[in-house]
Amino acid sequence: MASKVEELTITYEEDGVEVVKELDKAILSKGSWATVIFRYQQWEKAKSAYGPDRYSIRRYRKIDDEYRQQAKFNISSKDQATKIIDALEKWIKIAPDGAAEEQDQE
Image 1: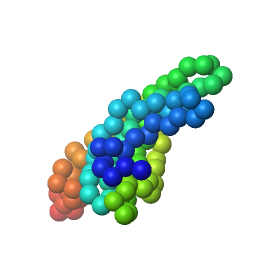
Image 2 (image 1 turned 120 degrees about the vertical axis):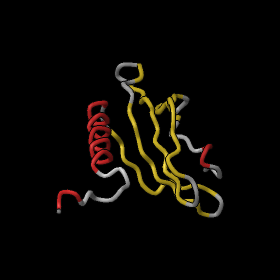
Image 3 (image 1 turned 30 degrees about the vertical axis):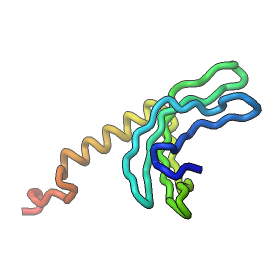
Image 4 (image 1 turned 180 degrees about the vertical axis):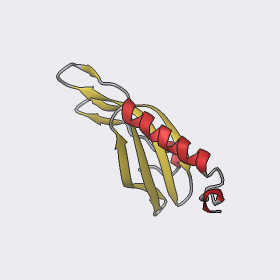
């Protein structure tokens, strides 16, 4: 396990084959709880090639100086990623300070 957020990876190897290949990551939060989003590809044995880009958001908790995964959410496709982005952008525009707009209630 990793002792620093920067060391966390989604890369996974099995029988000498890199089954999950990390392409990039962004650290969303650090501390005793860390959140990281990964961009990766998964090896497709039937095709003998890597599949399309995928994305995973993972939460880690630091216990005894090591980060341990606590939760994950896999984004299944570019279409789903786009829908998540669209929803977040809409919500941020509605309430840029993080609080609900009160203008409509007057």
